[in-house]
Image 1: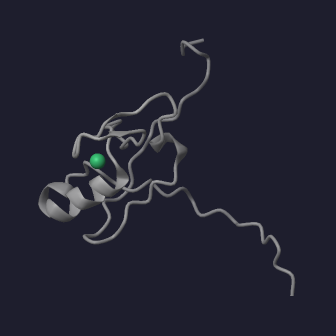
Image 2: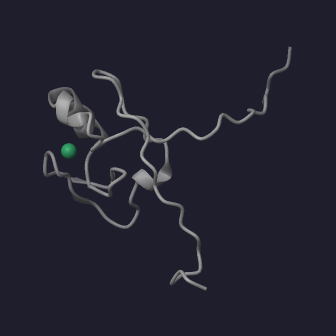
Image 3: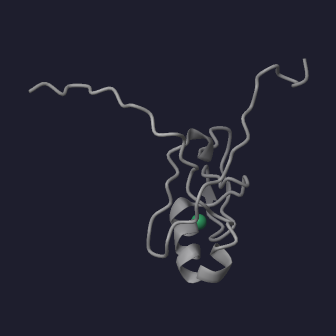
Length: 96
Ligand SMILES: [Zn+2]
């Protein structure tokens, strides 16, 4: 037993920085903090959204920041989710 809750927590691995003008892929539920809103580091308005580094930030603000700071953005402050190995999707409702 190592974890305080006994629940294994996978590290939140950041993925790639989206190209300028592209949107972040934040489909992972860990980007959403259900506990509370915190002031966005960019605009100051409370947000439940979190970056991979747990910075409170609106997704739209992060995207705007990437667009405004393309060089710094390459350092990976805000990135899309890391893509897992492509899984075989179940063809649901794929009836001919
Ligand atoms: Zn914001």
